[in-house]
Image (cartoon, rainbow, N blue to C red; front, side, top):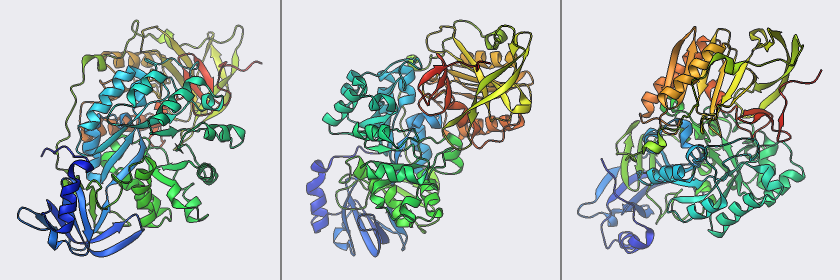
Length: 601
């Protein structure tokens, strides 16, 4: 089933008024429902809803005057009628799917509005990649708004990206029809230090009357935090504890609490509302990053709302945090996020507000999903070759590329080690004493320390940065390579065997990007991601099956982390403390400086 283009309110206002007044028939009437009203935080029994031209015309006790020849009437038999869910901050690329396939995956879960930041593809393809994501997003039967990425590179001077985003790019994009604001301002040191480029991007967004996304990934709530708040970001999603949530909202930011595939930050922060009693209007729910497996097996924003309720949040407040609060934040309260006259007719029918089974989903007045099945077409963009051929190596990698030479004369060293933290984005800055054999520093499975390498893949420079990482638990000869490497998206290779690290890197060059795991000398799992090395052409179920096989292969190599691949993909994210790797070296994100791999002894 195809979908009709949504007309603006001015184009259909006369029709909406006529339906509400009983002078013209509605297209659709939902009868005998329980109206979940997020404006007043109440459930109103015995309500009818009349829809015309994809928008709500009448919401009240009796819509019989709106029914005429051609009106479709659906008796919802006392089920709850609640607004379609909104994801306030997310990256489609994290699902390893195109916007069309991501939409197809989340529609059955009741997500009808998404606010997406395609900064992953921006790091690979620049403004042209953002435009492709934007254009495919506008083709979908649900609302996908695009935030113009703000930081490519995320931390200038600490990494080299495939392309860069400039203030001029931001200003140009603000005129595109689907751009809703500026993506998360990850370069928080730049804002704190009043970097002219960062402030110019924020100013261009504010001049356009759009919303500036925040990203303050530091535990420091002193003058640096206050300087960031003064710099203009309107929201933040990087909090991990109750005090983070409180501090953001007190400064006038909307605080976004995320539950993604690997981020579990709702439970520790929602107590600001449930226990401290802060005004819930300042809080929003989001996913940030969800992989295809989560979307297929667990859900999307419905999963987040259920989790918030399980954490003690009133169901109606949790629903507000995933609907009207989000719409209001982005200046769209008159357009979506609630069931009220004039708004887009995005409705979920459910029989229970706590367990939230998504039984039917309407978007723009059209039934688009029922009992977990998407009923509507999700059109695809014709992705060009320029978006597909993005893995550039100067030559095949060999085992010696991954050798780590010890300082002269050393038979052991004290090395800095990236420490993975399960279910959180930050890492630890660890140190470990490692042995030296034939002049080369060795990893140590007994200490859960293996090698990590960042292989440059945008300009075929031949660059390889080597280091050490702990936390994956790998206990056999293996290597995992990925061109999903937030945010610069070079290639991250983690392994215990240098020969297999080389094989894995070369395999990704061969297939045009993705994720591969080699163990015992052979490939055990492969997820092909030919679009920018980030996304697949396939549907969510297919990608999820391959990702599940990858997860099993990681477990077979000794890894027990939850969503371990997400942790792998973030090891080059040089804007979240404490220690990361980039094409320029090992990065201390507490000081925002390149640091030596070895401590002096």
